[in-house]
Each structure stands twice: as structure tokens, then as C-alpha cells.
Amino acid sequence: MSKRRGRYAAIWQAARLQTAREALINYLSDPTARPLPTGAVENRPPRIELAIEPFSVELANDQFIGESASVPAWTAHQGSMGGRVETLAAAAGSKTRLAIQGFCGARAVFIFDKAQTGTRQTSKRTGLSYIGYGAKSLSVPFGKSTELETELEAITSIRTAYGESATTGFSWQREAA
Picture 1 (tube, helix red, strand yellow):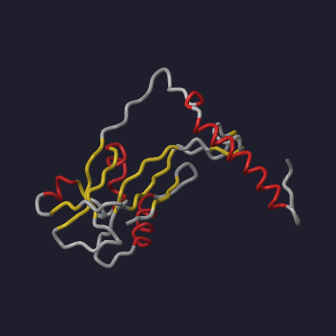
Picture 2 (cartoon, one colour; picture 1 turned 135 degrees about the vertical axis):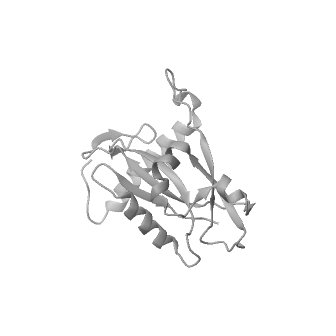
Picture 3 (cartoon, helix red, strand yellow; picture 1 turned 45 degrees about the horizontal axis):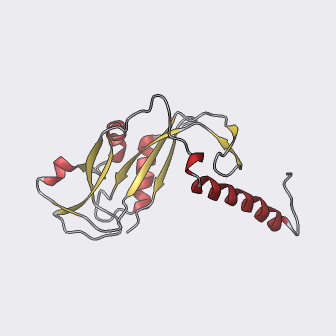
């Protein structure tokens, strides 16, 4: 379908998305449409427990929030974090771990092995076409490094330390309390 413009463009778009929505509902409601993977499946990498000081929740000086990351993600990117996260072993000696129900810490998402040109693909779930770049990603949680640091300042600093290129990228997930 060619791209339609004008008076009825929203109606054509809604019809196209309705078809995709129905395809997604069918995919999710039929377990046989999602067969288990066969062949060699990689095990999940081990995880490391980390400690952060959140942006949106005030903590006492001797408290922290516990988060985790995969060991490969932490090993590869701990240098980019600039003191915004530490291992649980380092923090646990003098501080108390808090668990806040519903809290989700900010995460830096490091994207790598990204192709410079995308390939047109069709979603198995919705049937819609998209451009895929075959990238992989790792994420690491982070908090503030100083009492006055904002989330945007932290993100800018981490992004600068990581250094993006044509085959790498950076994204983040905001903190949610």
C-alpha cells in the first residue's frame, strides 16, 4: 500500500494497524505459534548485584538500592559509569540495602554490533515491515554520583564516556518509582 496523504490518511492508517493488532492478538493467544527454540540455546550469563543511589527517592547516607546487571555488561561498561554504581560487595559493608516496591532504576543501554545499513524485515508477530540493524545490547543500572546530579546530567556523562560510532549506540531507560 502506498503512503496515503490527505483527508482520510488517519483512517487508512487505523485500518492497517487494526490488522496488525489482530495478528498480534492471534500470535499471543495461540501457544503453538510460538514453538520452543530447538538446537543450541545459550545460557543466560551470570548476574552481579550492584548498588545505586536513585534520582527520585531520597535516601539516608548509609542506604542504597540494590539492582543487578549481567557480568559481561558490568565488565565491559563499568568504566563508562563514572562512580554512579558500585558492586554490592563494596556497598554492603557500611550501608543498608533498601527494597522499594515498584521501583525500577535507571539503566544505560549500550548498543553494539549494529549494521550500518538496515535490511527490510517483516514482524512475525504483527506482519508489519520494519528495518532491522541486527544490533545487540547490554544494560547496566546507574544512579547519581553526587547529591545534586540530575538524571539527564548522568546520561550525558555516560554517553560521552561510552563514545558512539556508526556501529555502536546508546540509549537509556528512565528511573520509575
